[in-house]
Image 1 (cartoon, rainbow, N blue to C red):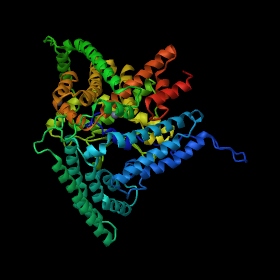
Image 2 (spheres, rainbow, N blue to C red; image 1 turned 180 degrees about the horizontal axis):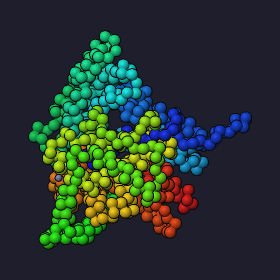
Image 3 (cartoon, helix red, strand yellow; image 1 turned 90 degrees about the vertical axis):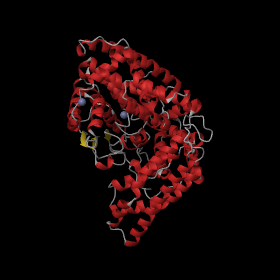
Image 4 (cartoon, protein in one colour; image 1 turned 30 degrees about the horizontal axis):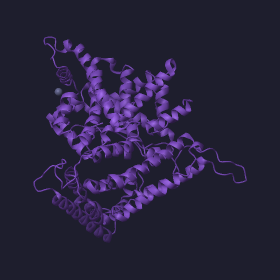
Length: 611
Ligand code: ZN
Ligand code: ZN
């Protein structure tokens, strides 16, 4: 959920939660067997749609060559396109063309799987168009421009022999100066925050285009002229990034005024109510509006505080027999949480403890019969490979993409070797004996890893590539509560208290993201919310301001997705009464792949004859 725990949603959608399984190039759900009748039968609506998808996906990768690299599609690895007006015109035409072609289907005649695939493609096209024409981050967020990521993937992924990869890298390098020239031409009235971010991240990118890269090419089997050209292009790329950083330096107001709506020279990072509501509907297809999820989060916070106060009151005499509890219930909860957080693993036992917990979670899910698991695709816990470290993720699921389906799924856990004793102590208190278990539930079983395993069975390339972020994160959060409801952790007050603390993070992220972008919440107000009401540490809370000023809506996806799934589960419980089975619900919910929750709900209702 947090950057410290696993990477941003973009990375999850791009690289972590892509379906494996027998996905063919034409993807999609199983087509009805082709007719053997000789007189050329009309193709069914499903066949027509699947043919269109087989055409759409390669067109999508051609249109998005860098995104393709993150997904394991290397056909256009050599292409780096400057995002100039011509590129934007091509992008707009892409949305218009495909939207028109997709409008040509009779939804009622499509299978459930294909219908939801169609809805997801159309939603993605609408979102892309809105980003291009209305949100226009390409204009006011200079941090949109950074070339390093795909280069790192090409250099570190052995999808082809080194020389072939270096030639693709060399071709990409040749376009870097034009890429940054277009970036400079695009940037207009940027927010100060995104300007600062762009400078920090592009400074970081410089390391990719230095002597080690040139040395790598020199040591390879490229020809001498190729090597000379490679070096020249690397130096030019480095210079282009330096030039972009210098350009951004020049944009900063001399007095460093914050772009907090007070400085007219630069745009405020706060996107405002109108854009926020629109962006929420496009980014978080959950059946909620931004305002309604905000209000829901406020109510959830009040409920969590009530529940935590009850449990803390019960626990208090056990841990502080000599002391009266503080009169302020939030202070009482905080005191207890701080005390319990001292119970944590040793720094050197971090990886082995995580490794030992995975089979425990697997067994609990099996014994309580909570959902289906697949013993033939085990999760392999490993220390995070060196080149994948440094993204800030200390525990994350690394799953094969749809184009590399036979690869194993790993749970990458980064050893805490590089932490100072002080940093390690603070981190380990946060991920104390209880929180560590919730983290493993969220990331692995029955959270992200289990959801992915089920999604693989739906064999929809569309759902693998355009997986819904709110559904994916919502499931991981839902799975935590589902486990505790089933008695995980012995149902102790301590376990519930820490789950509630963990859940408060998702709840308060929703509140602060909305309030900051639409109601002018200040940094001080946010810090008070996180420190006093969400029981966070100063270090964690202060990072949140940066994230909230640099992004919008993404932080609400965890709670919005969770709320939507929880509501659906409650509805099914009410509808089925004694017939309700948690296992049947979970399996059915997961059987439709990483589709938006309202799409899954419609498919479930249809299958169950609910109108
Ligand atoms: Zn997650
Ligand atoms: Zn300690």
